[in-house]
Length: 346
Image (cartoon, rainbow, N blue to C red; front, side, top):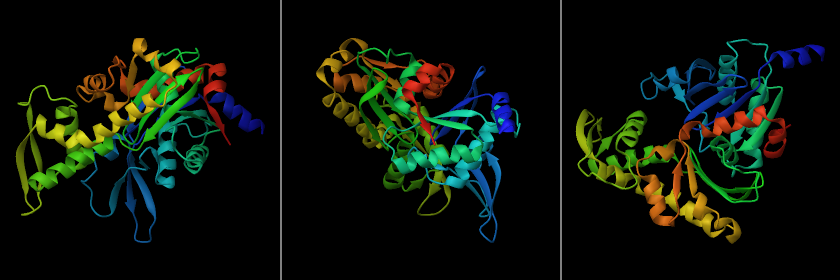
């Protein structure tokens, strides 16, 4: 018991944005110390045993490029843990990396979670964190963490609306008095956009793209409203008819068409949330607008599309990718705020 207390005193507490696409880690007193893909490379033995050979950036480079004995695994799917064992190893990796590979540290950890996940899914996150070496675990809903990261006045009796477009989920929430008044969580985000591009190219051109290349197309040409139809880039994939590699050009108009369904889901979720917001709070949005965070906020012209559909001001956070982990970090630094917005895991 004494040893456990000493180890707790020696450790530095962490906040973690455990995302489907990327995991970000905030170390108390230092800020963000890790930002890597949520990918783990595993070598599989003949008897079903699995050995971790790479995590994060190194593992992502292996996606689609490994022999049969090695798999690059994403342990989270649609914002929740899909592979408990691999998620535990990934958390251990990031905890040790944040603490310079020290194995004895047992930090207190805050982890952000989608607001719409089930109790079973919440328990999986808690158990993974404890098994990975946490001494205490707190969970905080992603929209609240994002709002804190942006600096919205969530403790006041006014309406704050956040749209966090992550890799696996999109979180749309109205927040007031340090709590969620109304929220919707849909399992549509950056990964669904990548998949939409892959499926579009298969249907229209019989061309199979890899996940990494589809993500690159989304980043370079993805747009919610096309302003320059002449924008284009070269695709590289495999012809599904001949089986041989082939290249072709794709335009911004085509990528916009490919992304129309997942982006449409985001827009509809925002509109539905507005329809279910109490009018006293909804009126605050006329002045404050809606804040966009997450990697999906970087899709070109998504703010213009949402403004067109809602008539409200749309504000993209200055650095949308880090707002959730930054908000978790600020809660970590403020014990009173932590008690108000986070739930202890047991």
